[in-house]
Image 1 (cartoon, rainbow, N blue to C red):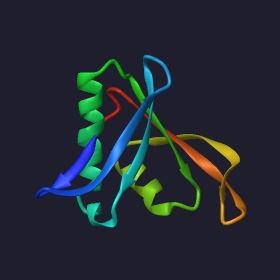
Image 2: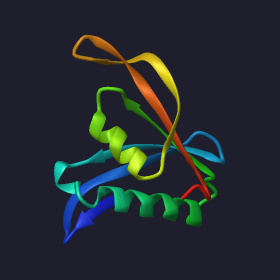
Image 3: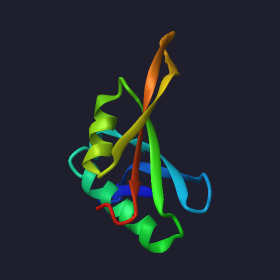
Image 4: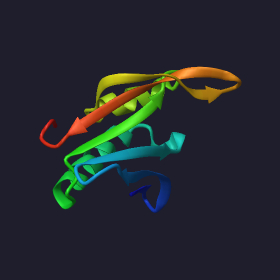
Length: 106
């Protein structure tokens, strides 16, 4: 799903079904998306829940990516776990924060 504002491309959400009910989302947004990203993210989740069989959306965010964590939480995602030392960045291992949102949570 793409995010546009006035015909300007601001990024996308890519979904990968893990099974029928649970889909993983990967978020790729440009800095210009800030300001409307949380509203668009909530709308995107509602669209997925209302137009597909998906019942739960999950995502993994590297612990150092504070803006992505804020965005996920502002979209209604709740932390449910951590994948310890699972993301390599600049020769250092970081945890990944595991977040999820179920249909009806919003």
